Image (cartoon, rainbow, N blue to C red; front, side, top):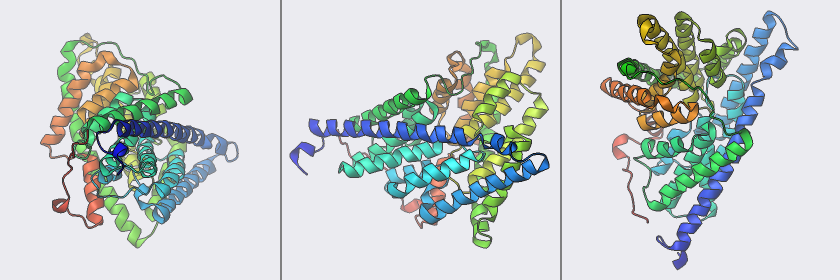
Length: 446
């Protein structure tokens, strides 16, 4: 290695920051194009209704989503098996040195298969693919730049942060996600830490230039009385149980889908596609990532039973969609599911304590952070992400109470972070046992 490229040299630090700038810029641009593509594809039911009418519309829609789901799974299995699902666990494994990042094949599959699957109406989020896309872009620049191992790991984290920042227009939550979620794998040095911040900043700048500056889910709620904090704590405990159940359901469904693939290839994703496609016409709120649904629910505030029925439906369609094996994330569906639960809880609280003026929307916002925390087990990210997404900074205290109690409740019930469980499963299939996994370490690169 030439002297000017050695660790600690000023030229090497400038070079690394420049690579982080490129990673953030390209991740923001490609991620924004990915989002715009999905938004455009989600209008297909309207176009289909102009051609097919009556009961046949439901059949035709079911077939459209089924074909998109099967095609997406086919692309994943034939070209890049690691592109299935969220991709967060793949990046964590790569930062540990246990999983390769084959960016040349992951990028096209994640983009096109992910857009087809999410755009067809499956209950998946765009943030998983953008995180994987951002990290794949980072792997590309790490290879081009001839980085050392620690720099490569740091750039992977920067790319993941850029992808999350792009998905939700939330740079602070993206940086905190790396700190809290990947604390075991991330090499903490001044250089790598600055790289994560720079990449998240540039990705957000690109996203705002292309898509606007408003919060993705602007839900401003009035400040709630401090006397309501115990109710938010109860909500957090409830969400902790839901989060543990959700994680177990996802892992069980993923295992079942893998077993079904051995006996009847593509039958499981085809069945999921048929159900989701039909629901896209019959009950559109039960499918898709749910971002539009969140705004409509908060605006209309249906009854408790309707909200609970919708929550059950979305729980099932989310588990089925993720386990089908297509590229897609769980953040957005978790937030949508949480809003259903939070609105129902807040409505009940308002009926039980009419004189206190409970605000259901405040419980819905707090539930977003709480369920995210219960599943991912990252309370700081849950608070920051919800505040950045909604702009409801007046709810910081109730949100913190909800997230803390959700985290404690999930821990008490024996729940484990969803991505940790998914990574363990991936490594087990690859023949890597937990006991043989090397522990993440910091080499001390300045």
